[in-house]
Amino acid sequence: MLSVITPARNMARYLPDMLDSVAALRTPHEHIVIDGDSDDGSVELLEGREDPHLTWISEPDSGQTEAVNKGLRLARGDLLAWVNADDVYIPEAVDRALEHLDRNPDVGAIFGGVNYVDENGAIFRTLVPPRFSWRTYLYFGAFVTTPTIVWRRELLKQAPSLNEAYVDAADYDFYLRLLRGARVHRIPEPLLNFRYHPTSKTTTDVWVQLDEAKEIRLRWARNPFQRGIMRGWERARRAILPRISSWPHPEPRRVVKLLRRIGARG
Image 1 (cartoon, rainbow, N blue to C red):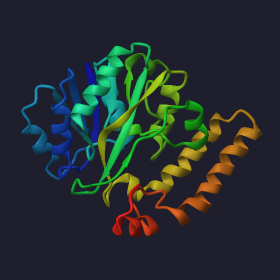
Image 2 (image 1 turned 180 degrees about the vertical axis):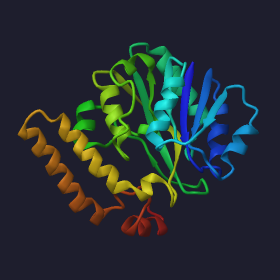
Image 3 (image 1 turned 90 degrees about the horizontal axis):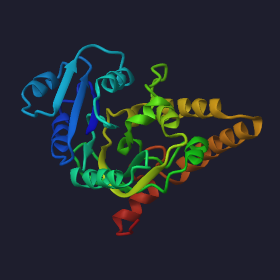
Image 4 (image 1 turned 45 degrees about the vertical axis):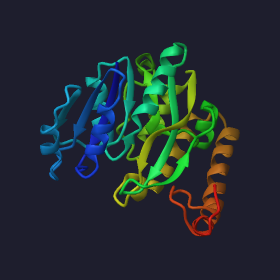
């Protein structure tokens, strides 16, 4: 069984799409929603659902990280996933990915591509990441679409919970610990629509996330040479990428927008 954990707080606008996408999975599953005492109608929405696979609680918490930890403690499945309330699974693609995991019992986790969508659900970018490399994930902190990760319960032995000391990079710290030494397969198709909107943490807290991620990877460094590579890469991408692309934001900007307007592809 797959346990899907969804932290939520005042996401009533987007939560129905998330709930519907998990409910549409053919794979046996449970959906655990941990709501942070929302006051926007989310609780009434959850109360009105008729889904035997859905369980939820609503109570004050310190934020997303604590909510996910609560969900991990409640989860009963031998497969686990964490998907935020404003994102949406692509059910048929997730089912295919889980079939791949079932056919390959030596694989500890899978991940796949994402469609970036705006607040109305329109796709503006599709990203299919390269094959997984834990060392690359450590040194450069990129190329893993973390909302799509599904992992086997036994990996929790090396990462039983998220570190609640982190404000916005707890997922990076968690997956570094969780996936270290594991066999991880990439699924070369989008598994999820990642919603990018004005109130999302990816929009509002991106630099907090990047600063925390840098500190996390530096703690893994074993010597000055490794720390030098990590710091050098971070300085280089912060100096160069915002000048030539929309990084660190996923939506197209500047030259990319212009090229798309005149019909260019890619």
